[in-house]
Image (cartoon, rainbow, N blue to C red; front, side):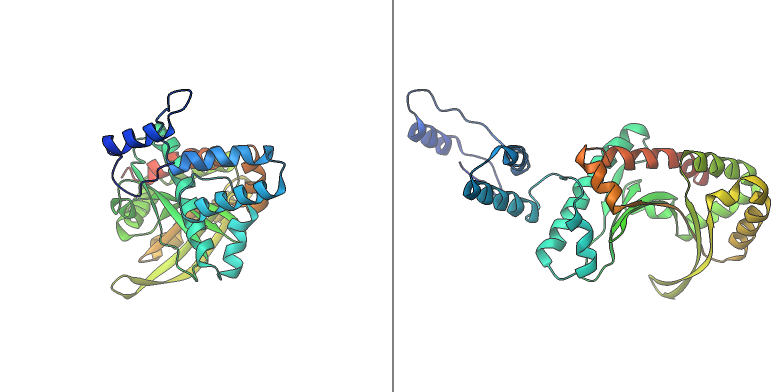
Length: 290
């Protein structure tokens, strides 16, 4: 096996290898990426019965994963335990690489659904960070100026949320509430029927050029937007948004760690998260339309 860190295989180099390997049947040249090799060994691992071989193969698989040379392999307890300990640089790099692989698969589903989702950006995971995030929307950094969607991996699971933060986006939010408030309320009620969520509102106060303090102002469960309470809750929400100079809105759900691990056993974690993001899109589209 020949490994390349960069560049491609030279014709004379490959000819020499093939000559050395020639036996009773002609040697065959097959290109494989490390991610494909990882998938191959991971699929074969359950079939290996010899303890020594099984240990060596499992260590090789882990090496590829911790080196960022594997696809997203499904959520495991270690993804979430890392955020409790923060004591392993290898685990940190692995978690970030896994989050990137997961986000790219989600992004592919979103882009096929709506052209708005041009790209995803995965945040830098520092040693003490309590979560690792990925944002979906227009090409970076343009997505920050509009309402977009974000996921964040943390100790208790994965938060999935619509995100309205910078002033250009929050100004559109205010405009929608003034002129299309009833339509937005109906869209949120429909979203509640799909799956309940939390409406989280904070105030952003600028501390330095690009640093802000966040002060919680309200948190409403989506059930407050339907039934007998919906007028009171909605009026409180709209009035608070109007009064805040820089409101920061999140429409968020938490997928618990145990749920994600269970979904990963049948390769449905990407599908589940992508479905939530697709359902959220009607609200995203409305908040960006004005």
